[in-house]
Image 1: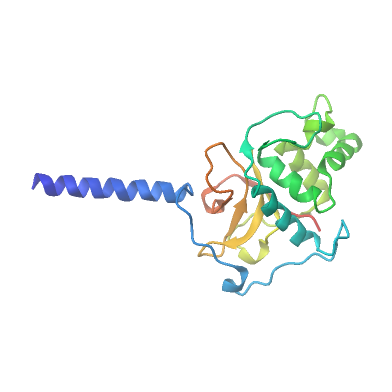
Image 2: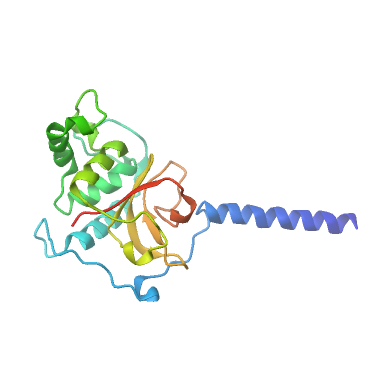
Length: 214
C-alpha cells in the first residue's frame, strides 16, 4: 500500500513538473499555420526599403533571421545604438526586424521624441538607448503605427510581422499558431530562454499594445 501511494505521489509530481515545463515553453509546443485555421496571411501594400518584399513579410523574415544569430541576453549600452556583438534584449528583436525592412527606430524614435517630448517620460534624450526601451516604443507605436486589438482570441486579427507590447516586454508576432489559433511570439525575454519563438500569449495578462507598421 505504501509503495502504491509513493508511486501515485511520484506520478503526480512528474505530471505537474511536465505541465510547468510545458507552460514555460521548456517543452516545445506543436505549431500550426494560418492555413490550418483558414486565415489568409496579411500582406502590406508598402515596401519601405524597396527590396521587393512587403513590409509585413519583411519584418517577420527579419525577426526570424535575427534570432537565428542566437543572441545572448544582456542589457548593455552601445555607442552605436544597435548592439554590434552577440548580446541583445527584447527591444533588439523589434529594432533589427524593422531596421532591415527600412524603418530605423534609432532615428525614428529620436525624431518623434524631439517633436513630441511631452508624450515621453524622458529626462535626458539619448538617441543610442531611447529606442531600446519598451516604454518609449509603446509611445512611438501609439503615434506612428496601426493600433490593433489586444484580444488574443480574435485570432484572424493577429498576423506574423505584427508587434506586441507587454508592460515590460515586447516581441514580434510569429506566423506560427497554437492549437487554438493563437499566435506564437518571436522574442528575447531572459538568459534562460531556450526557444526564441514561443507560445506565450495565453499566459500573459499584461498585453498593452498590438501594432502593425503598414
